[in-house]
Length: 309
Ligand SMILES: Cc1cc2nc3c(=O)[nH]c(=O)nc-3n(C[C@H](O)[C@H](O)[C@H](O)COP(=O)(O)OP(=O)(O)OC[C@H]3O[C@@H](n4cnc5c(N)ncnc54)[C@H](O)[C@@H]3O)c2cc1C
Image (tube, rainbow, N blue to C red; front, side, top):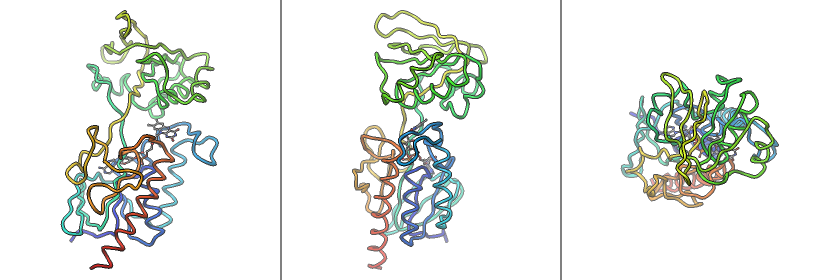
């Protein structure tokens, strides 16, 4: 017999852990499933400046605190990836790569992961000059020239971190401007070892076993440009991780779960919180906010189902 919980939260990023915290405080039995590392995307951020009451903090530090907090409230956390969720009557069955669980309500807080740039040899060079995480891999390139491919907040955060110990950081932007917060742009631009080249599209990774340079094309003139660097940090957007749940809840054309501020999905008893749902602003505070909303909705749903049994 699979173990039954009031609520299963899928994903232990800021949305999922905030949801779990509120469900636990409401006296519900909660299982949190996490397929990779606790903390989600924000754990990759070296510098968070927009979390209320913390002027500056590393994302991992914030998430470690949240993890301890839900542990103190008695959360059961299993490091298992949810592969499917099926509803039969009033019961959901969640299957992971190791086990099967049942529950009365589900909170999907699966977030997003990095998008690949889609240039030949990208996958082959991961670990040898292609990276999606400056916090994880940046230190390998101390004193070297590196490139950051991207134009938004994550790219600029990476550039700022890398500028602290790399010789040169080239920001390679597809359009004619940066789409990041002004405060962050100002910080990065004040670094003497950072430059930005606009209107360039990556065409080729150059290097035998390791990256040695990047070949770009100017999107306006078609002129080629070579940037010598030991590593390219790629930050060109994200994709939602909702594929395993596409038969349970309705997704939009980009794969986000269709849900508004109420976090209610197309399937009764399933709530979507954080970056995985349709929304305009995907950030730490909006993810945590969704976690709270989804938790209260899920608790009310569980109470309703239990009362009618
Ligand atoms: C480098 C970087 C820097 C950032 N900096 C900032 C910043 O300074 N300020 C800010 O406000 N925002 C920042 N963000 C955005 C912020 O991190 C996200 O908005 C936030 O993490 C979203 O939280 P979430 O819980 O919705 O999703 P996520 O953080 O993506 O967490 C989802 C979790 O679900 C897990 N998961 C997914 N599918 C499954 C499954 N099937 N089974 C089990 N587990 C699963 C994932 O492994 C992950 O741990 C940054 C993002 C990045 C990448």
